[in-house]
Length: 319
Length: 165
Image (cartoon, rainbow over all chains, first blue to last red; front, side, top):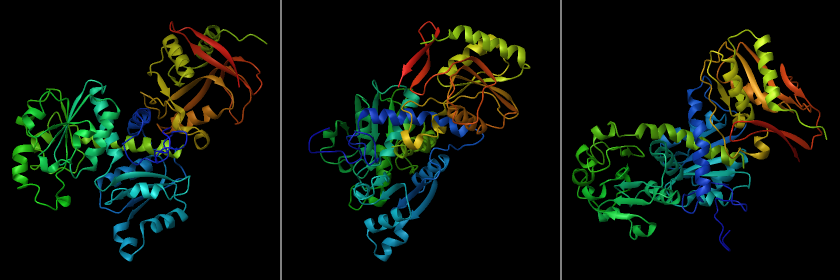
């Protein structure tokens, strides 16, 4: 343990107590989550698609920002583990009445919550909550501002490992709006943690955070060189709702240079897989032919996402 | 201290008992890991029509609240239809009965078996649940602080070992 600095998501023994970010998460914890997720995949093939692990636990999905897919997959994951799930779209209730974030959480804790799954437009919201809940309550960050989306990065790792077997010889390219993307940040940390030797980002300068190369990635501004010989292509969604300045001339222009088409994909390895965290903007960052093509693993990502979230919840609940 | 029996002899005894006392048509399901080794051997010997099933009962343990998730959970694999199938559940050591309870709960999430028998290599006593084996290789009596463990070497040979604490 580093002196004077303790990772808020780990306990004094270095075990996972909250899942807040991929940054600094030890590789052995990452691999433990990936290994644990594997047996959960086959549960969906059984007669009864439920396990008794979280029976009697209450999980609150606290979504301060709209999300369908992430909230639904967390809900399904919790229900497959037999937990009781309460979905709160807080944006629509307490906050508009003036209640603070911590008051909302304190009220829900008084209803005997065991776990909070938090999505918030402000970076750091899940950290703040994790710092104020009782010791036996666990917090999972389901996306905070531009900061982190760790379960998305974990399901991406799971998907890559499923198709590629091993991380140690891979070239992975992350394409698109890295600047606004918490998914990209979490992916970069995740991929470097598990030992992917070459992580690339491909984007126009205006959609890259400053000093992004300090995260250990190689920066490319064009698809022809950036996609050359990669094993994995991760497309990011163009974050229209986060785009407040004139960062791009137009979505059409973006598609012309950075949209993933069959033609641009030709320079990648022939067995390269194409991933996208969803929701996709067809014809903006990805061509429909590629999204539905033989190299696309976009729908398996969603399926694996449930298993990975089950693994995270089980590890936290058993803590 | 009494010496532990040879698991190879016990396994032969179990195979013989299953062959003579059961109608053919049952499926074998081993509990990970020791039970799975035994079920694998019994499957080779008895050649039932149904493929071998393996259960990892980690997700069904009743001490999850106390000790958390097992660090290495393996996928369960039941490659036949459990519904209406007669099943022999195989484990290495029968002690408290809690593993068998968990294994039966998991099996029922795959379907409703027509019947379950329990076959164990060693019954060491100390039951905490009303569970008994139908087929037992050997019965030994051990104090609570001692545990008997099935081991398998690289050549696939089985042995029993005593652990203290």
